[in-house]
Length: 352
Image 1 (tube, rainbow, N blue to C red):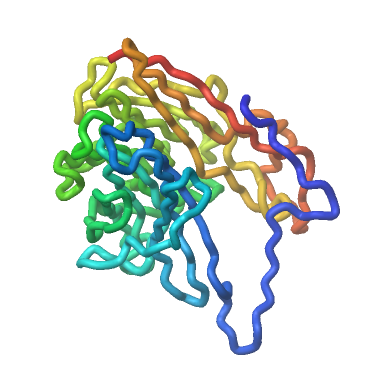
Image 2: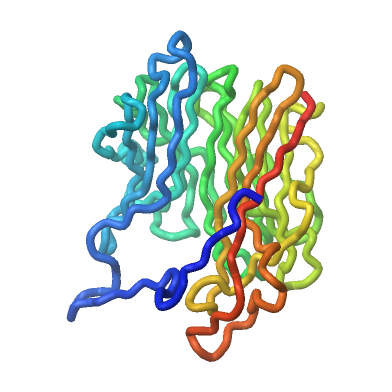
């Protein structure tokens, strides 16, 4: 266990937000709400990348009262001491959109920067796509957005907590033109998909489903990385549930170009968690709204013999069963017991 969590003592109410809406003003937030900030470093040698040592950050500024929400980019060339002013990188061209969210950054072995993100061209989940932009000059200039593929997204049936869809990107650390994007998409149930480009993100191959479990259980929220040409994927998985309420949540892993599998084939799926947990605990709204941290992270390196893969995730295993409080009470202060999620991590050794 990495972090044992913390509690907010009375009289403070965790996650409580209040709004004051002026007369004749539609309900929305004023100003700018910043969300989903993400960071990446160029860890290449100066001989390999002219951008070596740069720090890159993307995020989404939601402009209030039905304004736009673009993806913006900032960079630091002095080790994070200062950053450039955020600039919009998700507009322009036929694939540019005013509604975007959930950006992820990857840096190739020659310093090429890729940013993948989810778009809302029609303003709703039903019209979502995954787009990508790239820079070959350390973030000074950016390509126009390219559509990677379409996403079918919705609230996962039978799951009490929210299940948003985002895009994740990784670059082959041996070839900057080989790029992977992962996401979840629903067709009855959610599954994990990967698409690959071999020409620097200009064109994309068809979606490849990573998980192969039978039945209608969901797989959600992937995370990806590449080491020594191998693509590693981890995600949250409900396959071990036995009730309609999807009471058992785990983390699973698979890879390609490793363990004897060559893309588009993936290796067998490995259960990372050793204990299932219930993700439907009433965490928000004073103990009346189910919520699970929709974050998971994976990193990987090649040690000369094997791939060493680290995965970290949010986990409810330490919430006592009687205190998960799966049924909200009559009052908005239905907060009993200790519902602290914890962060768990594991290390995998994967053969070539």
